[in-house]
Length: 415
Ligand code: GLU
Image 1 (spheres, helix red, strand yellow):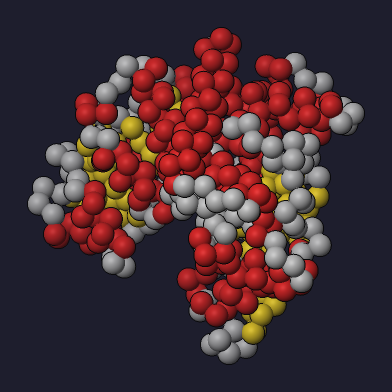
Image 2 (cartoon, protein in one colour):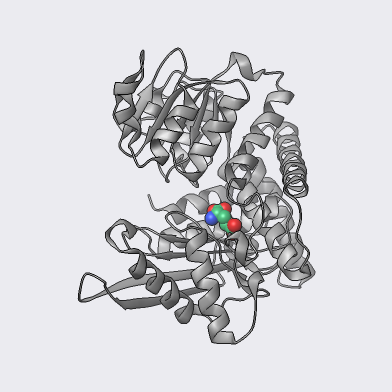
């Protein structure tokens, strides 16, 4: 099933809980604007390349549109729309005054040179420059884009508009007005929510084991934090394979190995008592906490029966399909949903935007404290709703968010 259908299912369930009218429900399932352009660039290797690009502006009732841009071969209108919708929900869950948008370019960035990627970033901004801006729509990094690409996009935007406008994009390099703490914010926020849930349930880190899928920016940082908290990380995977050890992995050593340009399964030869296997093996690890921090649709109807974890922390967007989600909920597995778990990224993006607009820059401690307070408050409103109504954390997160979005739409006289 397509990603946007999944979103609609979540909205339908939450709308039933909130007793929203079918007209309101329909509005919550429809993007405000879908922008499309084909970007053509000369390639360093010769010839030209044309890449379909999208910006979907989903809902801006609560504030300017906000959301990342991904460079991924499978980016298409359906996926970008679903992710844009999820951004609106995410911003509402954490209570920041922003709406939801997302961008995507259908490209395999591993096949392009750095120069090509810079040109593509500039073309993207040229194509959509009239629709983006600090009060309109604020992009950020997502899958296979990073601070460097944000810096180039900012440069192109300022070239077009002739003004300094650092608040038009977040996740920028520090030298261009980026925020301290933004690079690790997604995983930092997810682990903060996990800690709040563990406190609620009187769980101690040192008796828990964890498995992490993804060893990039988010997965690597999540593994590092869980390990530093005293959890035994028994499985870690990248797209090439899984490494596991019942005795616990040396996470710092593995992350250094990965950062040096190696693949995780190749570390098997260096580590005693470790076994390597295919990438998907991490999902069926016997760990207590499973952290999918890679791509969408990892836990599906086909493999949900193999899941052994009691807690799933969704650092990636959409890693569990609705069918698998329902089965996990029925089995008593606690899924901390993406729209709550990974909202630390956009929370610190919001802080970055605030800093850019005020021209006053915060210390790392202030950013961290603000992020932690925001995440804990969001967790509490979701967990309270879930226990009051006897629903999953995902249903609760969507309900809390849709309540806030519809309140803003009502205030505007849109519904
Ligand atoms: N791409 C990230 C997400 O999916 C961050 C978005 C942002 O900071 O605007 O939440």
